[in-house]
Image (cartoon, rainbow, N blue to C red; front, side, top):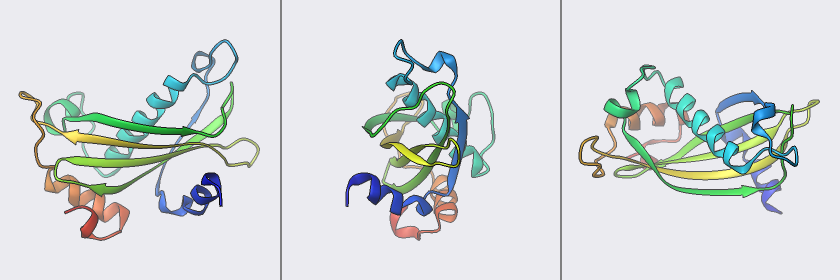
Length: 158
């Protein structure tokens, strides 16, 4: 099995979906979505995931209540999107460490009832003290909300 087939077999693990459409400003001179744009979409999907858990949407939420910083991205591109393709970003959290939270994402093209996998990404974010920027233990509230949403048991979120 190749990586796309493996990911296709895992799609039901991703309970959160964020939908969008490629805008003209998202594409480069080759009419292909610029690789940096995908990183913005991944961030929007992660943010939407957290808000879908019931966390309050406030302007300073990620500054004061959940200051998390991205420390690692891995992105595998399989194909590209073009203007004006429709897409969805699938998100899951497979693990929360002492101070880190791991996000997995799949972006799929959803044009004409197709659902072609465009990319797979894994991101690690770290919960930090807002003032000192020193890593801190991820709050139990986040651990509990994610564990309940993902339904995978507490061993991945201790």
